[in-house]
Length: 386
Ligand SMILES: *Cc1c(COP(=O)(O)O)cnc(C)c1O
Figure 1 (cartoon, rainbow, N blue to C red):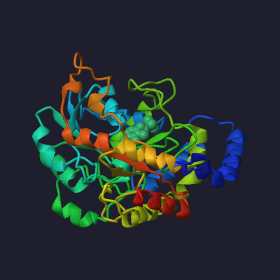
Figure 2 (tube, rainbow, N blue to C red):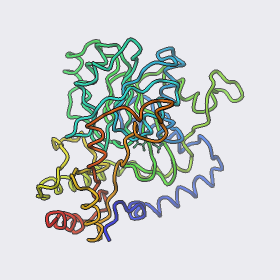
Figure 3 (cartoon, helix red, strand yellow):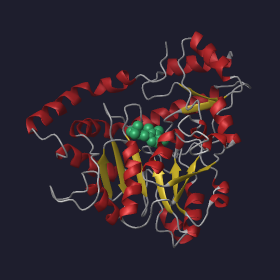
């Protein structure tokens, strides 16, 4: 059986190091916001080329706190509209709602599954104040175009990088600044250049996964960072003195310790994922299967390798009979979820044909840094015989 994702195998090489770290934390006797969190925040900020990293409880909270932080700074207010791709994992959309903002859904491109920048402008109203760019399945959204639209319309850019740790574009920040001199919020999940904010998740299955929940925000914006360090901890910088209506969402000390062990291997793991993706892309040859579009650059870290096919249930069953486990990301588009009935949000009545097509046709093949060459070859052979 080739599992879709073997988390135990992914974490096995780190077991001794995890145990040593655990001993260290036990010896320290400091369990919340201690040295390990501080070390990780410093290391992850450096890894992302960001000035600041704020460790939080999970990826969802990272998004919510960015929105709440901008609200505290007066850059967003209740009822403002936020552009978001219609086919994202629902957490992106729920985070906007959780911050009392209004999600405005925009169709993705069928070829990349990422938001179609050409369809953003028509959704912008006087209430639109931000774009939540999601780097879905590990591939960066078209940030150059998104940044330009944001710049022209004075919108904030927030990035959901929960699936794209370590993805970066081959881009030159100097020429970028020449092109968009007024852009104060250019940011990328791997390479940050200015005042955006990026949300990460360390859910166990993500490219950088903890052994439980975890998340982080990276940013260059010192004002935002200051508010976020406080908001995650009850809105308090000095114990028992509260400046903001904050929450409890701190990156756990033990999870931070585990992440400190794993972070140095993230680039190597992403390289392995890209190598597998290259094989899938060059060796899968079957007219019934549509492969994802990728330019072979480091803008993709293949959190997922997502194909499309018109008879998905049949293909999934065939693969399963051949001992290959696959998963559907995701079976139901956010606007069709029961959580958004016609009587309240009315979303269930909306029509997003590209999004709905994607949700009907996508299938994620096994993908992880511990997949062997033989396993990849087997998946390819079985698919070519379909
Ligand atoms: C996983 C994920 C999240 C949420 O992260 P959690 O840590 O599970 O809260 C948000 N957005 C996207 C795109 C994700 O894949």
